[in-house]
Every structure is written in C-alpha cells, then in structure tokens.
Image 1 (cartoon, one colour):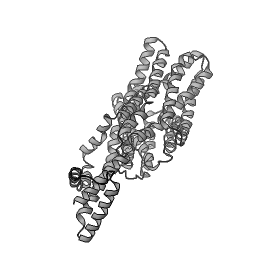
Image 2 (image 1 turned 90 degrees about the vertical axis):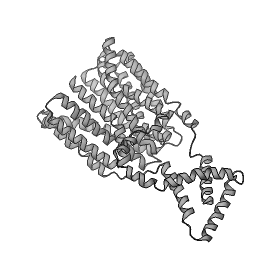
Image 3 (image 1 turned 120 degrees about the horizontal axis):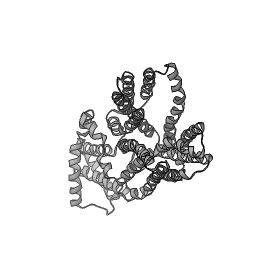
Image 4 (image 1 turned 30 degrees about the horizontal axis):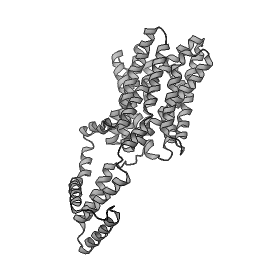
Amino acid sequence: MQASIVQSLLAGFYLLAGPLASGLANSFGCRLVVIAGSMTTFIGFILSSIAPSLPLLFISFGIIGGIGFGLVYLPSILIVNQYFEKRRAFALGIAVCGSGIGTAIFSQLFPFLLKVCENNWRRFLIYAAFITLLSVLCGLCYREIPLVTSEDNEDKRVKSCFDFSCGGNDGHDSLSSQLTINSSVSMNSPRGKISQEETEDMTGNLMMTSLTTTHGTSQRARRRFSLLAILRSMIDKSLLSDLSFILIAITAFLTFSCLFVPFIFLGKQAITVGATSSQQSYLLLVIGLVNIIGRVVCGLISDLPKVDPLFVHNLGIIVGGIATCIVPLLTYYWMYIVYAVLFAWSVACFSSLRAIICIELLGLEKLSNAFGMMMLCMGVATLIGPPIAALLKDLSGNFDLSFYVMGTLLTLSGVLCIPLRIVKTRKPNPRSPKNIRQSELQSMHTIERF
C-alpha cells in the first residue's frame, strides 16, 4: 500500500508540475528547464537512496522526482511544436511515443539492474538516478526558435511607426513619406477618406501605446528573470475566461481520472473469464505496443489535408469510453484483447493530439501556459481517479461498477470536446482581415499626424 502511494505521488507531481514548468520555460527557455528538471530528478533519486524513513521517501522520490520529470516533459512538447507546422501532428506523435518505447526498454533493463544490485533497492536507485541524468544531454541539444507573440508584433509595428515619423530630419523625405501614406490611406479606406474626429481618436490611442512601447522591450528584459515574473507567467489569466480552454481542461481531467483504471484493474477483471497470470500480462503488453504505434499513426492521419485532428481525438476517446463501459459484459479472453486494442488507440489519440488541439484553438504562443495548466488538471485527476475506482470496487464487491463509471466519464470527456470548433468560430478573431485593415489604418494616420 505504502509503495503504491510513492508511485502515485511520482505520477501525480509529474503532472502537477505543469504550471511551474510552463512559467520557467517562458522565462528561461526549454533547454535550461530540461537540464534543471533532469538535475532535480537526479537529486531526488539520490536522496531516496539514503532516505531513512518512508515519509522522507514520499518527499524525495514522489514529490522531488515527480517535479523533476514534469520539468523535463513539458519543454519536450513545446520544443517540437516550435519546429514543425506542416507535419506537426506526425512529429509530435513520434516524440510522445518515446515514452512507450522507453517503458518497453526499461521494463526489461530494470529487472536486470536489480539483479546486478542484488535486490538492493537503494543501490538500484543510484543507477536509476544516473540514467535520469542522461536527459541533460538531450536538453543540451535543444535549440529554441524565439517565439514572437502578437503583443510583440504590435509593439514592433507601433514602435517602427513612431520611430519612422520622428526620425526623419530631411524635409523632402518627410513630405515624400507623408504623401505616400496619404495615398495609401485613400486607396485602402473603405469610404475613401477618414474623418478628422476618427483620426484624432485613433491617433490619440496609438500615441499613448507608442510612448509606452519605446521602453517595453527593455522593461520585459529586466522583468524576465524576476521571481514575480516567473510566478505570473505560470498562469495565463486570459485562459481562465476562454471557453475553449475550459472545455479542454475538463476533458483532460475526466480522461486522466479514468486513464489508469484499465492498467490497474483490467488483468484482475480478466480473471472472471479464466485468464492466467501470463495472459493478464499479455493484455498490458498489447496496450503498450498498440499505444506506441497508435501515437505515430494518429499524428500521421491528423496531418492529412481533409482530416480534422479534433475529430480523430474525439472519436478515439468516445470509442475508448464506450468500450470501457462494456468490459464487465465480456465473456471471452479474445474480447479483452480487442478491448485492449481499442483502449490503447484511445490513449494514443489523446496523448498525441492534445497539444495540437491547444495550438489550433488557442494559438502556439499560449501553448506553454495552456499545456501547463492542463497538466495540473491531469495531475489532480491522477491522484483521485484510481482511489475512487478502488472505492467503487470495495462498495460493490467487484470491478464492474468501476468500469461502468470510468467508461462513462471517458465517453463524456470526448463528447464535451465536440462543440470546440463551434465555440472557437464564435469568438472574435483579432487577426481577421477587417481588424488587420483597421490596425494598418491606425498606424498610417499616426505617422501622418506626426
């Protein structure tokens, strides 16, 4: 029981560290955060090897180790999305399937290391600590692409207009520029010309923006490494009022509250149809292998021109949820094999496409904060989901109720994502042609007035 608590803490804090990893990645970049996360896990495992009591092991292995893994995980998602656009889903699918491959490799390596350590778990943790330290080498290979946000673009555009209007000393150049701009306004204005009152209103607002922008870059650079800036960058308040993100976060919570239940209880449920111990292990092997392949295939399919990643994501989760609901009705072992394939495909769809959906609905510049806050929801769900399933088992005397409830929640999480496209299209788009044209006109009239 106590050993399972340690594992639950590790899995939970690995996800709960999402906002912290997001804030640090925004301030210091993915490379440094991955290196720091690897070092944190290394320290946690080393401390665990000398921990004199179990409560200290909860802290060193479960909390410190979990936070370290979280600091490594989130930047690895962010860095891939920075480099790919056309084949982003496929690239991310390859990246996230690494966890499945690693699980398959280390499931064979760790028993061997344990034998080398003569079943001394303290010595084994030292070996594991140095293995986690290899992530430092991976982090050193990260080469970030500076992300230019819409705010930065606006600052640069306004600042260039302000500098252009104030920096000309030659009267002929200024007159020529002013004439060119006047011509552009006449051609681009939908009414042929803009009234003096409208010009003054737009100019006044933009003049205030330009005056505050001239020092904006240096101020952000000074605030970048302050503790307060890191804490503020952990959570984007605008996401909390975004209905699209709220639905995504609820879906993530519901999905992860159910995700580990089949891994824990499926083999035990298969005993009801006479499954042997080796057959129970084979079910988990099927889930692992299909999950690895499914993550790559999901990404490849979602990159096709006429395929909507959100549809693939929703379909996978709903099918997995319905299949989980009917697990108690299965009467033959081969049916459990079919379920293992369907559930693994469901997990693959969610794991490989959740970041893609965040980018499509919220934008790449919000991915760090959105994914970090989503990891927080998944971490809370990971801590409470399996205990609730175990409680349902104790109340009913079997696993049937657990599969019914968790399957229903998983199906609901997929259904809640169906209206996401509708919610997104109803939101005003700041980059629409109408808004872009108005923004350009504002800039031109500001230059003319100066």
